[in-house]
Image (spheres, rainbow, N blue to C red):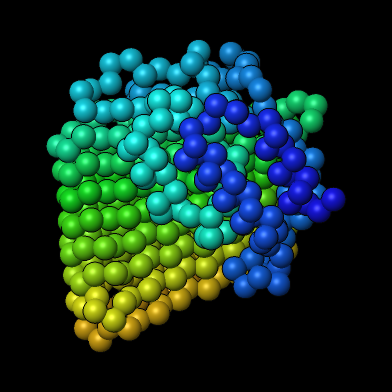
Amino acid sequence: MSAPERFLERLTARRAEDPSWVAARRQAGAARFEALGFPTRRDEEWKYTDVRRIAEGDFALATDAGYDAEGFEVQRLELDAYRLVLVDGVFSAELSRLEGLPAGVVVEPLSQALADNHEAVGGSLGRLAGVDFSPFTALNTAFADEGVVVRLSPGTVVDKPIYVLMLSRAGGQPVMSHPRVLIEAGARSEATVVEHYTGEPEAANFTNVVTEVLLERSAIVDHYKLQETGSSDMHVASIHVEQARDSRFASFNLHLGGALVRNDLVADLNAEGAETTYNGLFFVQGRQHVDNHTLVNHNAPRTFSNENYKGILDERSHGVFNGKVFVKKDAQQIEAYQNNANLLLSDRAEIDTKPELVIYADDVKCSHGATTGQLDEEAVYALRTRGIDEPMARALLTLAFAGEVMERVKLNAVAERVERAVAGRLPERFNLADLVETAEAVQES
């Protein structure tokens, strides 16, 4: 039996009461996945990422959402937010907190939306991320029966972040989950959405998530993705964004965990005035592998994009960055900027980086670049002369390297989680902000 056939065997457990349009999409996803199979390194888009660990795995489907209460309190972010929780892809009403949502805001599990056969969901789900995008998107389409639906009515401003927490449990047989996240922001609406992937450190599961974000005219969405699962978890994700006139989308793509991580991010700027900003940071250690593929499609004139991804790699970790900006023929007077900088903390760490510009218009402002380097030993010495020991000096310079991305993070709970991962737990006598400022000044001098 082939690997795709083994995975699709689990489809027999899907619900018989699915609406007809859901059943039809499942069949289309399954057929496409079976035809494509898992990607290999012979495929250009997967040249540096080997997914055999996923293809050869034997993953079950979770049937309950039980989770250790003490572990949950440790792993969740300290956010004042509307919270929806999935445990191994199963909705947990017990851990979710959705009371008090403002008028004009809907946040509900995908299973509820599918049970109600919402026409709005049926019309939007899969519109941006179809079965042809990748084998993993096709696989998600075949299996997705849970996830999150967020809908904002025109003019609605959400007063607190919408926090989507996806937990991974350790157990006997590894499990797989295929969550689907749909965010629809009506005209002039504003919201912050946080997708947080974490769980028990010993978990060795496979998460395959697809997120679709649709912004109508003048809508504003800040989207945070914080991935810090255990060192044996595998995570594949794609985020697809469609932007109307004068809309603004900001992505904060922060990766700290996982054994094998692949993330695709695609934005279509379809009307004048649309702006998208990609902020990315990945910090990997051991034998972790993280692969970020990003794409911005400037489909209309007078649109704007700015991308800044930073990678920090230690020990024998491996990172991949492939960023592409595509400017269509009639997309004149656009601005597009892209930068990828990488810091190698070990001689055995590797990074493959490929920034790309594809331009078919002649009145544009575009730039791209990539750099790779190591810590400046003179800067380490300069910090040590200020009474800071060598390990902490290196940690602070590493954190200062990430500072250009982190200073844009508006949620303290997210920023603190990343800072702790990068710099470790600092002694209480040190003021983190002052030390980072010192490290940045040393680097610049």
